[in-house]
Length: 220
Image 1 (cartoon, helix red, strand yellow):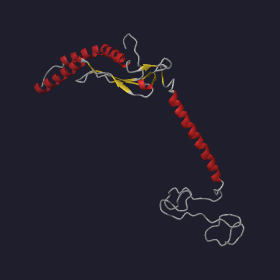
Image 2 (image 1 turned 90 degrees about the vertical axis):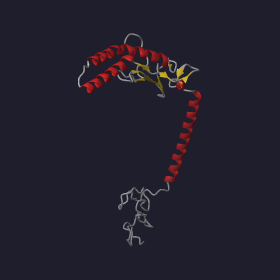
Image 3 (image 1 turned 180 degrees about the vertical axis):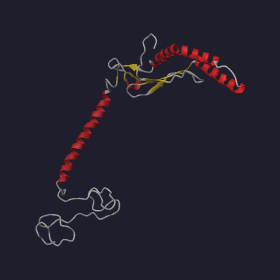
Image 4 (image 1 turned 30 degrees about the vertical axis):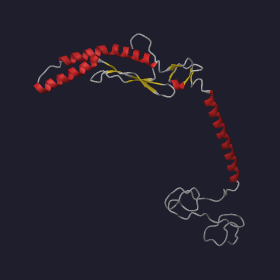
């Protein structure tokens, strides 16, 4: 950059083109908080366009006549390149001047934000000074979610008192490898996954087909 103070050093995108029919200057500026974009008006770069036209004419002449000189094309390219830097800096300053009417600079964090991310009443961005009503609504929702989570956890603990933790369960079907999550039948192929019945005396699982409990000898 040439002399002079330049802002928006991080939150902009350079869309400038140096050569060709689309040669010119244009920049995208972003809100640091929500990333909404404002695009500056396009400013044509006449030297770059001229260099593109001269290059096309030189190529056309060479193809048509089988001869020709590219001296004019090289000269035009040199002229465009020599004037590019100062012209871009000037266009960038003009774009920044226009962008400053679309963004606000927070005095606390120094970020540039759009109007929707600006607390106009306090003169700071909403990142540094959030909207009170919005924060209150968010806090109320968090409180509701926390209370429901606590009640759900308590209900789960109560239900857990009735869950048989000693009976082994097949979590994967041996036929099709589908996850069963302890179901009696495989949800993938319907294979019977029912667990062995517990002994009526000691509650030890009794294998299918067994006449007596292998743990205490009670007849089934």
